[in-house]
Image (cartoon, rainbow, N blue to C red; front, side, top):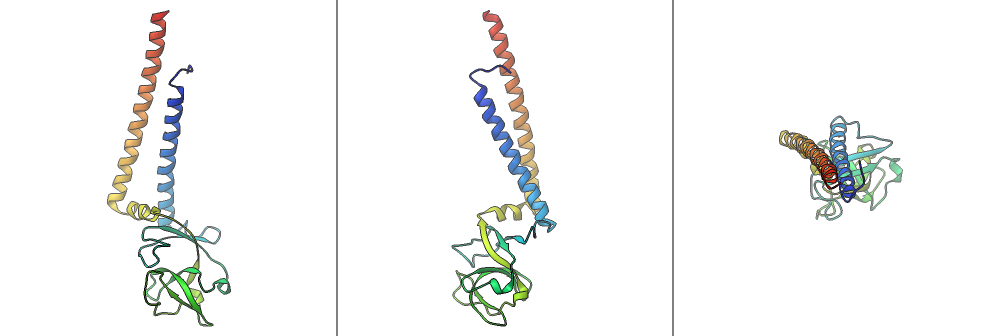
Length: 183
């Protein structure tokens, strides 16, 4: 390929294409691994999708959160923990008090503390950080309409990549033909 005025544009399109495919690959792999629970425990870190607004504004529904499992005596008042409720629902709430029996928790957006006390054996880990909205994407991909949308996006990506290749080839051939005509 000869260097000309259009070379930076072609390079930026290649970076954009690589970024697009990287994002698509990340979403597909992450959602499959989460679905298979492979991603649920990598070196003590766990990944969860928040489904309620009980911890707003710090954590919102649809956020993907990461927790870290450590020894039960390391959790203290003020920590946000992820735990199993009595009905086996995963809950993310703040510790407001603790005793030998366990932890008293409360959602930041809730007026009342949680009725149940959380035993150390119910705790999956301490909240580390969140990625806003990423959980919504994972939940959407697990639905039929989300899978269809993902396939459509991949097809559009292939079509755009092919169009880019055809246009680049035409421009290069046109450039060379035009140059030959002038000489």
